[in-house]
Length: 133
Image 1 (cartoon, rainbow, N blue to C red):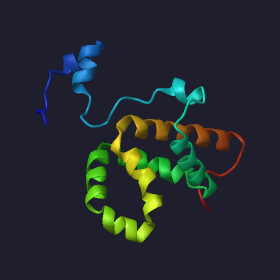
Image 2 (cartoon, rainbow, N blue to C red):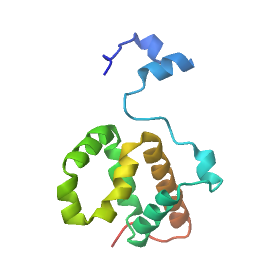
Image 3 (cartoon, helix red, strand yellow):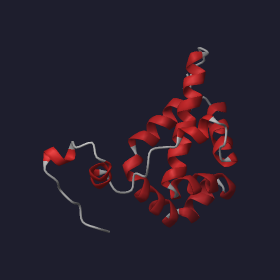
Image 4 (cartoon, rainbow, N blue to C red):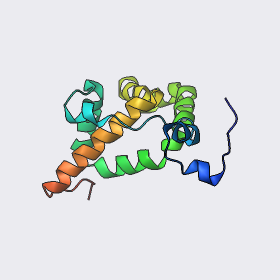
């Protein structure tokens, strides 16, 4: 792990690409590529997970939980790996695999969150609730 680099405030607000990459927090990954999501070129696993969450009307809570804990993605993945035998016993092996795959890859997590946002917007435009009640 490389040490954090501090820059003067003027350099932090410079709009150049180089400075933006250097001040980005480690482990967050790049922003999602919305072109693949909008074109429908998505991972079937992610679509299946979003369908599962949507069927339980948990789009907004899932999105809020993921957004709040995004900086802890690496820690969550490491913890899930350590606790995997226990989680498999509690949740079931096939139910935990998709979530482990999403946590392992920052780009996949970003794509998953973008899909959740897209579904949540579509549901709210149709006037359907996106959270359980």
